[in-house]
Length: 330
Image (cartoon, rainbow, N blue to C red; front, side, top):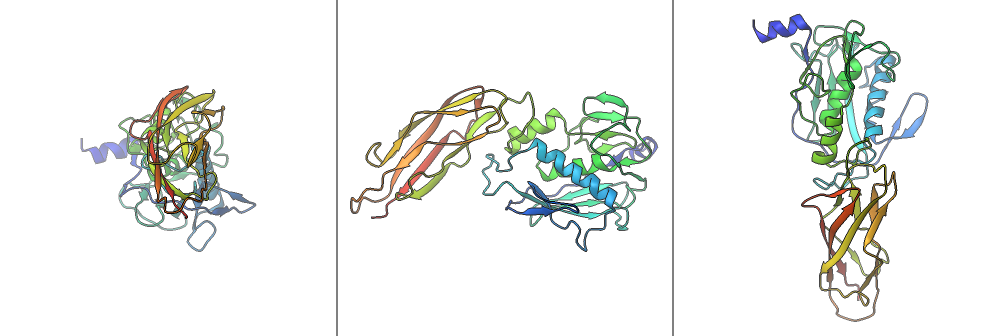
């Protein structure tokens, strides 16, 4: 039997055709219908002329955004390092009133790369119909549990929440997984709901580099950037160490100065050699203090740092060193 016919019989529909990679991030605010809140994922064209979604569809998309925001408290990736302010812009187009036809049985499409990532939602769920949940924060309509994050027995139609979560997953850097029980499976059947799985969240933490908030994931410690600089007049420059997962217990990360042309005591001072992350903390700065001396023609100087050990976490190979340049201001 041809695969296209088999898919039509079982109701499975392709969820995504991805292009390129993530874009950069900048700070912004998302304006909601009844309130204005700071947001990590900003729906840029919400309630504009380009927003053709119904109020119920908008509610579902808002909840999908909130779901990923709750799982990822920081979008400043350490792998590779991103220059940003913990905000991801996304544009949504389509919806049941738009008339948008993505072709064939495709229900959703994520385009990333240049500019703001765009998620397109087919008007009629690829020839099926949408199930638009009035209460997307619960799954009472899906009483059958296939796994802890995959449910069935739901109302007729393709679950809009699952599709939006899936497409946002691609924007966040997730690929397709060859597992029909996973949110990031390439196809999904009607009357079923998927939520982000431990594998999805772990991939984001360990391969994409965003900091996640999910029980059971052992944090990795890394320098956010491999190098930085500041004038010697800056008393306390920022050299951040981040964890790939929000810890549920105390984490300590040890660091040392491994070299450089600057002298400890006359050019800078470092207090201690251990960073302590309390439960819930995932970012710390090295306790570095620069000395603004008056020595003329001293020139620029460097300090080399390295992470050398951790308790309650592991070190992220390849992201354990940092070169800091002190820019002479005399």
